[in-house]
Length: 229
Length: 229
Image 1 (cartoon, helix red, strand yellow):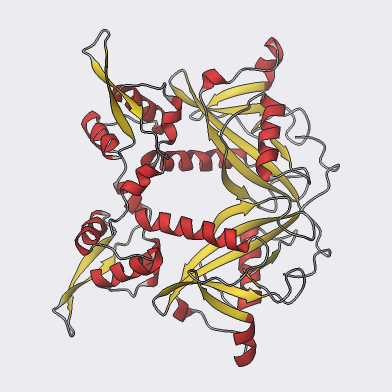
Image 2 (tube, chains in turn yellow, brown):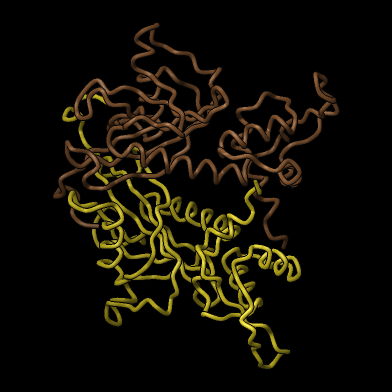
């Protein structure tokens, strides 16, 4: 730890990856850049951290300013610090990510402006992106797939009560692949994060049990597979 | 993303949490601060990021400069950005961590100086620490426990061939708790990350099979518990 003053300081920014499920597809929120560099290119919402705010405060503020999205639970993802990642100079970006219910997100720009400036892009068909934002999105995707395996992170997107078929559909959409029904159910039930409500959903098909989340920390699912002492 | 120049910039530092097993105990590498703030207090190795180096380069450089430790595999842990974490002003710290074999680490200071300035502290008995370094260590500990469950991260500390009893001892030391022998073995073998060598270790006790790591990515252990499509 050397002398505090003698180093030229980098700029510090935040970038936010907001995922949602829309039209049976996993999508990410993008904004169109209005200023150089990469003017007119799609980018993650984000911006510079104020000296008086924490990193998470900066992320929430930028997200709301640029997209109108608020009240989401952000989790820190990774800090991207390559020396050449921004043509303006040294900019270190602390990336955050969130998974939210798209119906809870209200557009804040009006009509045409919203369409031109904000985009929910399918992660399978990303447009050309500014900076290293494609890398950031790919990193966030990996983390999301990872978390799906041992926490209830994906279940935030379901209604309060849901069938096993509905959960499986959600997982298939996020993971982008078909899952075996029997294996999926066995695994999901073994995680011990959902419970039967005792109520059956009736419809076109045969009745299906409605489940709900157990009122525990999502990480308790992980705890269950810890070695028992 | 607003105008680039108009924001006062924070300082950016790196801090490094190096864990090892010594004397059957999980320990963390600390250095004694030679300058204010917190002069004379124990702290994590670390320092300011140069404008021309990546975050990881900064972490490796600081670690070697301050402790002589090199050739370790660092993983980014978390970025700590509370506005009040450093009395000198706004300093954002990108924390890294590593788990290394203590026998591979050679002290680089001589005799008395080494004893005064570098300490392997038991994570169960940390001395008072500078800044938010205790929080950083606790965060790293959580991550380490987490990773133990689904990757082979801890096995880096074992010799090339080892018995199941030796692995169990390693896990018990890191987790700080006794584990049930039968459950542990079942779980470890089910992870599919180690394989029998066909060679038996003989000694005071009855012969025990020697195992080795499978030559696969540690994360393949995780992949094994993915839902099968």
